[in-house]
Image 1 (tube, rainbow, N blue to C red):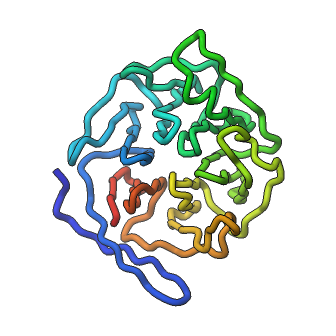
Image 2: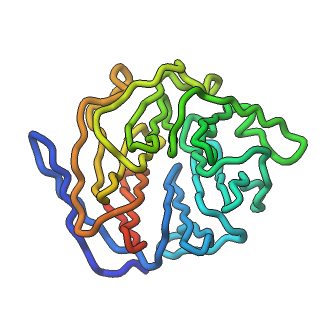
Length: 255
């Protein structure tokens, strides 16, 4: 059950201030991902959890990063092995990634230990069932430490916290237009929601939202600061809920 502690979350823009309510959710996590109405997370021990109603349910296995989206439920462990949830069981996927993202249009994307970037289109990602399934990973030029996709574009940050967008990404062309556009600002992690919303956290634990994103302007126009009462380290957005992991591992559900 969620604790009654309520925080005010203020989002500032040039024209208005929007106040949201943040409820602290019991438990501690180091990473969280929300998509297609589901919420998953992992704690410092690698234990995996999913939110059913107002309670966390532990899943078998150990992961350092988990992602849920149109391509299913995927994760990576401390050995950088890749897994997909198939029929309630974790099935290993060929390849090595330190971070994986399932939020694109039924595509999978991620980065490996050397910050090399990879993606897999819809046919391979959705149809993967086990060792006999093809895994057509495609390498994308460049280097990023975190890479995340939405319905039409993918965003990432590099080791210098520079922000980039890859446009024209589709379920059959997960590599996009192969032309990186640098976005002003600095972020240490970034997440694209399944509706295309973009949120991120900088090295100081401050949260930002990208505004002005449209089909004709997928890069958006400006960053809006999102102020919460505690410094943050990870965020994810889905169905109007901003999920925040604070620097001490506390979980906030903001609406």
